[in-house]
Image (cartoon, rainbow over all chains, first blue to last red; front, side):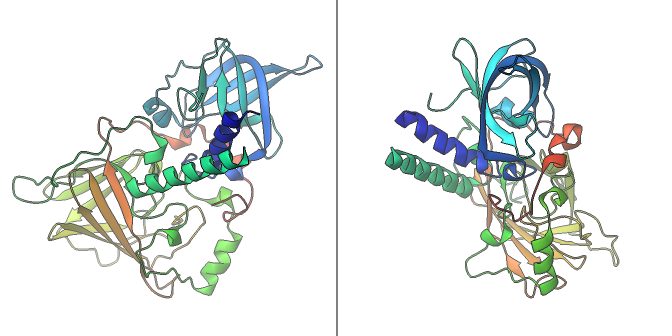
Length: 132
Length: 253
C-alpha cells in the first residue's frame, strides 16, 4: 500500500463510520468495516431510491459461479448535490467495487469506491474519488 | 506511513469539527457555496426574516448529551437509563422511517416559511415531513399526543421562541436512544445571527425521564443555490432488517 493510498483509506474509513453519512441509521450497525471486499462484475440493476440508492452487480467467483451483489450508496438527494447522476452507473456497465460487507455475511455491502475500465472513479458520496 | 495516516485522521477530525461548527451535514456536500454574509434580513414590518434553506439542527443528533450549552447536563431517571442500555439500533424510529421529533435533525436541508399567522418548517430529511408553528396562539388544554406536538411561537426581540407540548413518547432524541415521555415540553430559540447563520437552542424539560431540564446548543447555516429534493424514506428501506446490535453499540456513536 502506498502512503497516499493508506492515508486516503484511513480517512475514508473514518468518514464512512460517521453516522452523518447514514442519515437514518448507523452504518456501523449494518456493515463491518473489517470485512472489506474488492469485486468486479456487470451491473444488472440500479435502484435510484431512498433512503439509499443501490445497484446490483453480477460477480463471477473463482469456480465460475455468479453471485449477484447488492451494493449501497448514499441517498439520491446527497448524490445529486455531489455530482452524481441517476445514470452515472447503469445496467450493463462493468465496474470494480471496493467496500465493506454486511455484518450478516450476505452479498450486500457499501460501494465505497467504484472504478470504471477507463479509470474514472465514483464513491459512496461523490461523483469522483477524493485524493485520486 | 503511520504518521501520515495519523495526520490524515487528524485532518478528517478537524473537518468533522468544522462541519459541526457550520451545522450538521455541511461536511456531506461538495461545492456548497459559502453562506451569505451581511446583516440578518428583516421583513417589511421589521420582523426578523428566517426564511431560506438551512442546514444544521438544534443539537447533536448522534448523542444529545454531546451538544449542550456549557454547564448543561443530561441526567436520566433510572428507568430511562435502563431503557437506553436495552435499545437496539433497528428499533430507532428514524431507521424505521418515522419522524425524528424535536430537536433531532438530519444531514439534509430544511426550509422555514413565514406567514403572518403560521410558520412552517419543511424537512427534506426527517421523512420529508413538516412542522407548523402557530404564532401568538395558545396551546389547547389537552392536546392529543403527536410526534411533533403542538407548537406556538412568539418573538422575543430578534429571537423566535417556539413552545411545544403534546408530544407522544415515540421518537428518540438521537441514535443513542435517549428517550422521553408525554410530559415532554420543549422551548426552542432561533436567532439569525447574520444573513448566513443561525443559532438554535432547545430546552428539553421532561420530568418523566430526566431529573432536570437541559438546553442544547445547535447551529444552522444557509445552504445557497439549492432547493429541497425529494426524500421518501419508506420507498426502499432495505437496511432495517440488517441493522444489528445495541443503539449504543460498539462502533456506534
